[in-house]
Length: 178
Figure (cartoon, one colour):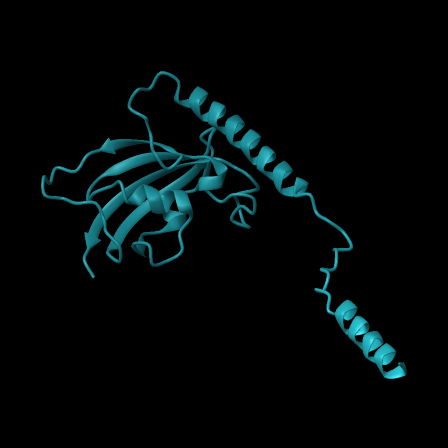
């Protein structure tokens, strides 16, 4: 009788001990509220900057609202019918100046000097990188970038501060295939 009790006892312990492990609960749970607040702040900032830009443009119908979130107008158009916009890896030689929305010059064309930029292979702030894709050799354009398309939250750590929308006057001198 004793062996049967021991066998029953061991079998019952074995069956009861075969239980799936329980997941441990986190000590603290994040609600994602910081991200939601950040999104709301950025949307409000964009709407504020957008209204400033639209009031600056006024009734000037030459400005085009791009699909990339900035406004531009072409001051001079390329005479070359066969001229193409730059593609990935091509070298774009250009000059540009930067000013704020009030027209105060931040960087002149002498400050920025002539730039050679390998399309989408080098660092350049997002708005200008996207703006160059719209231009051909010999064209001059004025771009108005909201802060998130310009230097954003950090600025350029020199003359352009936090969340400053800017105006860039850009001239493309040449586009060279690599």
